[in-house]
Length: 237
Image (cartoon, rainbow, N blue to C red; front, side):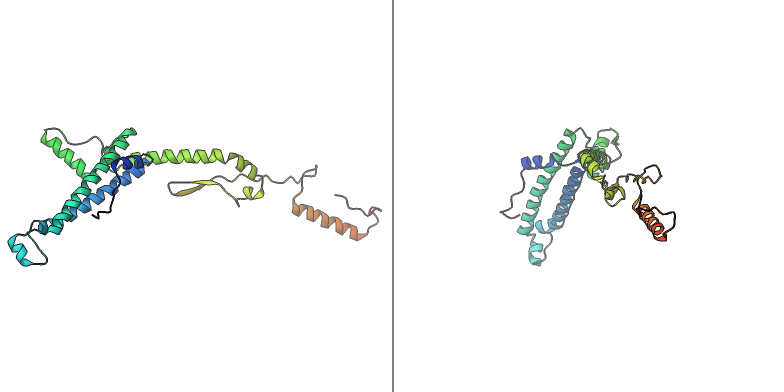
């Protein structure tokens, strides 16, 4: 470990996890445990050289049982990092339980097996009441709750804007649509039905095409020059 490296302090880590969702806390716990496993594996590979049982440079050192000081130091530093990471997992556990959730779904496979072995040694059934150890159930529930709150807030904040904008044809014909992103899927809101123009003969509004056809028919009638034409030659709509 470099002398210039300054790992985050436990107090700052506590502050950092407060704003994380339950699902993110679960992923962070998995990430830390994965790092711990890598360091433990590294220590297992370095141990023969640190004990002098193996060497890659000088066979005489191995025969004399001389430990490799670099490997000894590397193992020591790894142990320090492992201890710090285990403290962070404990901080995450306290945060999860502080929110009223159970840690059972966040436990690692090693934790479950260790508790079962301890229970068996004490003559107690080591089977736990929770069969889920990946934390997905509680994480999914909180993500659904957060997504629902965000969707509701978005709907409430855009009600006025949507009402005004929906008067434009682009909001009625599907050119513009609103929706939400939930669980990685885009869910579009239902496009309001566009009211059909009134085309009856009792003063209803004509569409552009109907108005154009009516004008063409009227112009053709004026061009015929029949005896029944109005002397004013006007065009009445």
